[in-house]
Every structure is written in structure tokens, then in C-alpha cells.
Amino acid sequence: EEQIDEKINELTKLEEQIKSEMAILNKKKSEKEQQKEARYEAKVGKLVKIYAAMKPKAAAEKVNELNLEVAQEIFLRMREASASQILSFVDNEKAAKISERLAFKIK
Image (cartoon, rainbow, N blue to C red):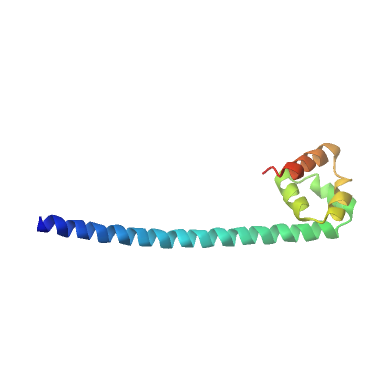
């Protein structure tokens, strides 16, 4: 019985150690995810500034070449006045798809 109790205590300590290490790993993972998200937001923010600074027709030509997810992210963060000017020059079908995605925030 004494040996069994000793083994149970060892296993309990080992379990606590594993839980502690898992918590540390989860925290590190969370920090990495936050850093990744911050880098993504910074990149999208930079794109928004670039597109907003362009002439609407030139920006629209570039938007026509973008995939819908990227276009949506740019337009979501752009001021309405800039977005509407650019969107007016975007291909009609693509503009409709972007508008739908913006209206329903499809990811």
C-alpha cells in the first residue's frame, strides 16, 4: 500500500507538472497568434492608406485584380467617401460581390 501511495503521489506531481507546462505553451501560442494578428492588421492598414491615396480609377483597376477577401478587408477599413469613389470604378460584377461581402461581412 505504501508503494502504491508513493506511485500515486509521483503521478499526481507529474500530472501537475504537465498541466503547468501546457499552460505555458498555450500562453506562448496565444502571444504568437496575437503578434501574427497585429502584423496582419498593420499590413491591411498600410494597404488601406495606399489605396485611399491613389486616384479612384487607378485604385479600382488594382481592386479588380484582387481576390474578394483582400478587397473586402481593404474596403471594411476605408472611409466611406474613399471607398465609394473607388467602388464606382470597379467592375460591376466584382463591385456587387464586394458590396455583398461588406453588407454581410462574409469571411
